[in-house]
Image (cartoon, rainbow, N blue to C red; front, side):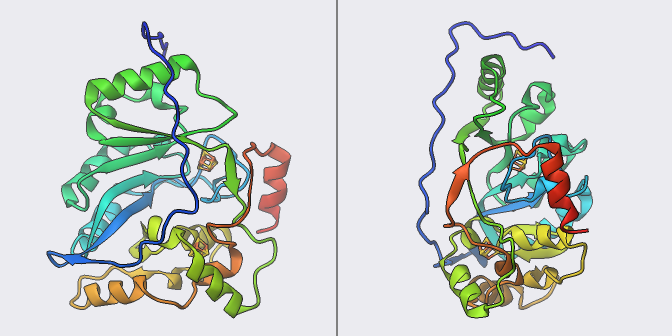
Length: 290
Ligand code: SF4
Ligand code: SF4
């Protein structure tokens, strides 16, 4: 679509996040539900960018789209014991999902969280129909040094957000955390220390295929390793059964590291300047896992 700059529109100053954020491990229960910061579902694995050190491993994963109905079913079970402040649709690039509006509406119908947000690189926001803007409550838009969002696109986003009452969170992403380990840890005590110190385990709770995970890494490692290593047992099955609340509390406060932690440096690892992987680099990285 053509994007006309709005008159007198200025490009907003993006916010810089403070890292590492404080730990939030004291989970309260209210109304029979554990109060959490957020919960997310990754609704596509692929992306229209290939950022080095993408924590969702998108450049390495095949094209994949989540089915809307199973997401709703997982959230209905999760909502019996969890009450996150926000539910996030993430990817890959979630704007690539053709049933995105249906997914947002199904999420809302579960009552899982008062706010439904979407995390995006923003490049496709100029193509989104009004029904999308109507459905979503909030957007987190990553701002990379390259490719930059054009001033016209930023103006369009600002205009649509104001028109439909969508809250915008512009997030500078000029550095990426070096989370992936070239060589898996053999030392489980070291993995336990990484897990203990990792702030991501409170901030990136995720549902996928009937499981709840304390972070997003196990589900993506499971796809990356083609099921050759078991990362699904890092999660908690979401079952319709008494005892799910206690099981969830025990899972959230566990000290045993995830299998995924053996492959991960955690959230406080050093950072590197953002860059886009070239096609040959992506192919070389993918070849490691075939
Ligand atoms: S835009 Fe986000 S999901 Fe896509 S490759 Fe970059 S970091 Fe990963
Ligand atoms: S795999 Fe472990 S260390 Fe890595 S982000 Fe998840 S909890 Fe943190």
